[in-house]
Amino acid sequence: MNKSRQRTTLAHAHLMTLVAMMVVVILSSRAAAQDHGLSWTGTWATSPMRDDAGKGFNRQTLRQIVHTSVGGQVARIHISNLFGAQPLTVADVHIAQRSADSSIVAATDQKVQFGGLFSVTVQPGTEAISDPVDFQVPRQADVAISIYLPNPTGLPTYHPSGFQTNYTADGDVSGLASLSGVKTTQSYYFLINLDVQNKAVRGSVVTLGASITDGYASTADTNRRWPNDLAQKLLDAGLNIGVLNQGISGNRLLAAGAGDSAETRFDRDVLNEPGVRWVIFSDDPINDLGSTAPPPTADQLIAGIGRLIARAHQKQIKFVCSTLTPYQGAAYWTSAGEAAREQINSFLRSRTSGCDAVVDQDAATHDPLHPAQFLPAYDSGDHLHPNEAGLQAIADAVNLSLFSHPGFSRTGAPAAKSH
Image 1 (spheres, one colour):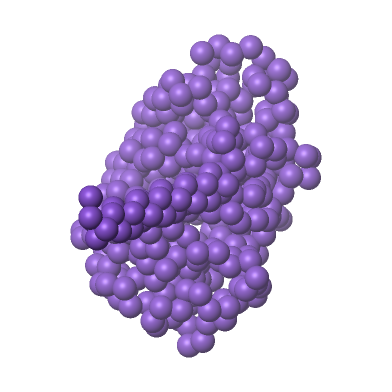
Image 2 (tube, rainbow, N blue to C red; image 1 turned 30 degrees about the vertical axis):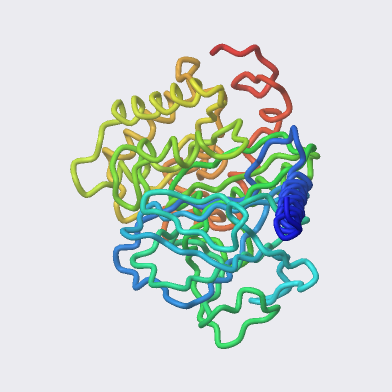
């Protein structure tokens, strides 16, 4: 072998060694960012919807604020293009602890990768889950997630009723500690989940419902939805359980309208959520009863709830039913709807409902002198939605012993699994 060929062979060997060392470093860093043996648990979520009237984004940065339930040492995010009609490119994604308004704590800022890359293209009807990132996720605190959208997005996947101020700025400014010239919105775009790894966390509970669960009539930017109140109550009791709010204002159990029906979205928004062990099904059927079309009967709604229970039990997820809150005086209240509400509530309280437990939201919020109406101190004024005191009463009605034992009975005492 001549000297030239020897030098070429030696250089090639050195190059291959360097490449191998780089691969080891990359793999090692990824391993460091994910504790082996630990599963993922959702600390925040929101339900994706179709935005048929939106204009989309182009060459803009979104900085979106999420309020966590549980904390962790490793994080990942989910970007959804579920309802998009074209590929969505997301670039220069950052996660940081929030300071105030659109500002972040610069020392906490971390760049987020997808498959080892700093950008990802998400095909229509799908979502992208980021690589694990070493990031101290605080519990019951605000995290800022910034994404740059370099190309026209088309109609976005979003959640309209976020009740949280989020920020849009021109250009790629994801890495800046403070943003200027921002526009604000109270909707979430493309971002649907923040997950954590934490060996002290025992899983997550999904709250599935409509506007009462979504946080309607709570003050924006204060995190006073009843799922937020429940998350605080769990942490105060020493129960490290994530709370994932999958409420959609106007949502229904059996029919699409404001978002897919609860039956249609149950797999996506409940069963497939990271670390889910419990689901609390809340206020959707009230909107079915108030439908402008001939509303479903109580028996049809009870059958729909039963189908959700069966699907949850197939996945070994506990299904907690909620009685329906009073709504006499609301624009769509009828005597027939009231009779159906009372029939549904009686069934849910019965021993034959199939529910693993019941949160009696009705008993927690109605006026004892006028059971078809809210207690005046809990009425937001529209006679359909509870105010913040009423939302707190709903959270307080959740028996925490439901989460303290591997199994539980309808009264919250330990019980053997029946499915």
